[in-house]
Image 1 (cartoon, helix red, strand yellow):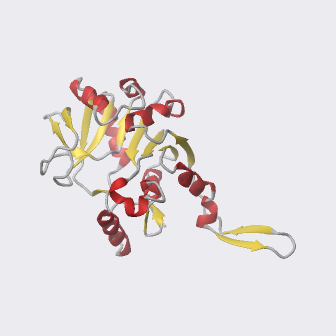
Image 2 (cartoon, one colour):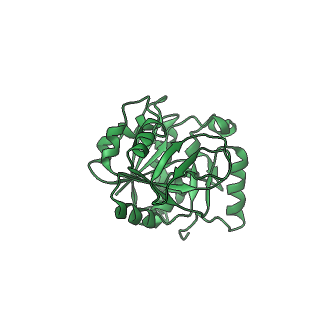
Image 3 (spheres, helix red, strand yellow):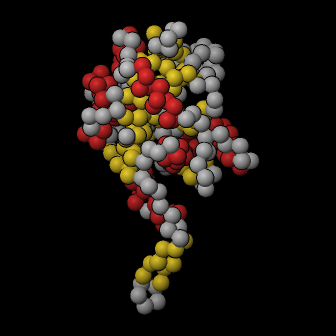
Length: 259
């Protein structure tokens, strides 16, 4: 099953670092947050990734092109052979497809552009700037029980995000992005989607969080997996510093894998 990660935005609210790299490539304790997200999915057995790149997409491509160099000890012999020897080669069991989905394409358009890589199968979707300690297998199992087209992990981080109105059987009745209300459930990403969801996306200028999700909710096809554990996005330098602090003291809930 493929994991689609949205990684193409400008990251303007953390411009201190996004001037030189896309936000998913901003590091927390020496590793891009994108890497942390992929390690989460990999821990639960999901090893095939489709990354929807855009802004400075070459940075993502170069990171993976040189991944084994980043993660291994290397000897460069310039004396006679002009050779390179990789020691203790550290690799991941990943297949990574990086797609340039356009500089100004909106989130729905980015998903639509990777349709050929998704195929006609259920897929996972999340954002490239947030980590969570949710059991992704549990989210997938839940999705399979209700038979709807989309499952969204709903979290409760506070009041600066939009809210979801969820009825008693967990069907999302209303999807209201960016409302200024405290204490509601919000879109935490970590979604499970059926391929039919792509039909709800018109084109490049479609924001996935608006028309497609709103229509899915109106049709009773969007279901919430309520999760009250750890979730944190990285919108600002304050968020980045908080995540780095958790890692530095060994209290990072999303780090479910072994080193």
